[in-house]
Image (cartoon, rainbow over all chains, first blue to last red):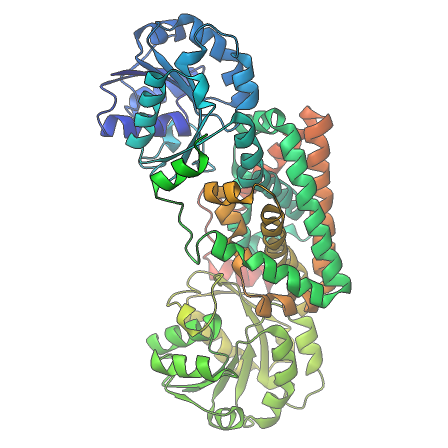
Length: 297
Length: 297
């Protein structure tokens, strides 16, 4: 199968590695707005060839779009315009509602599967691509009733080749949940990094930085070019999650200051996350059937 | 050397493992308020024997106190009362000022080295003890001028046996820096866990929980019995750090809502933490001399 990947960064590159390894892809075509990235992707053999967009679309059985969400929104109508009638298109962006809105009335809407594979690292670019990045993680497929069954089946098979479990929900549900799970922790990390770097004693702070600090601010190293458009696309749910978070921070702060027993209640409540996330070494839910059952509409 | 460890949990137990392995300890004596923990520590051979406090103190060349900070503060005067005149005492608590204040005028104050080895996990109890937990991490030693040089040398040697680099500063500086590096990320994690668990769609959120969320809330699994006393002991600096953090969160929120270019400025600033922490795979400063030079008074 010919697969064209638009965007040869961390996500697109990692998909390429696993789809080649699993023999799901027989020929991988790359498209990238950056010539430097395109050359790098060719050099490290992420893809077999790099082509201009329209040529890559004309040759593809499956098109995978792995670029920032604002650029997905901008390019998706053009992609659907240029594919052959039987070609399947999916995107891997972290937000969905504004993207699906952009092609709601497109004549090839049923060729398109809105998706969000929940995995990543704080690094970017072709050289950041990792084999097995998606293994055991969850891919969200949105609004499945609006896609053709053969296109849905192909994208499901692709995620299975990546080792992923699949959850089905509406674009709105995905954006709401993802605001809390993924977008809020990124905002929190950016703000924590800025708060720590604003201190006068920052040189001591960073020389001493320990495990807890490093794991919390790790996400603050993520690329603004990827995350800025996500924050803008999912603005209302992210603001909601931030308001909730700030409210809980203030409540915790007040309890430290004025009400020790309330402080312990809040901590005891928070530690319940150990059970919710599955103990000391949380692993993602691995049982595909369970996930499908929970979220199939 | 006979070493008595008061508190056989994650920290005390991990110290025991490494001090035995490095032959720094020839005989390890354990003290624990919990009979269950004491028996477990004996069973898994963390210590050679468990004794009542005063007997353990009478036999010790070195006493290591690894219990919650409020309990360190309460027991430290008694410990200094009962040790022999040449015995060295250190504690491993995450806060220092209120602890050193509690023994400021004790006749054996020079036998005591206030310390804080910066390492841990979110787990607790004797079975959570890990070999190599402290390897490559930083131990802070406070107010060194108030301790006798032979006691200081022994504790430095102990931390070297644990594979640690040593930083020297005042108790006040340690409490101020640690508020940002360690205590604030813990409060942030507790609040994030509570915010996420308060949502109606929490079952979806947690089934989908991904890497970023897990690494951010990991700290929320930490034991309230250990962290509550830390938050109370270091209240004023933690409130300061929380105010700074909340201010930066609000600024980030406002920028998402109203000022996209400001949002990108804030993100670009935050990503500088990549350089400050040493790139994509931050490792703690390993050069002991550098640390000693930076922070020796």
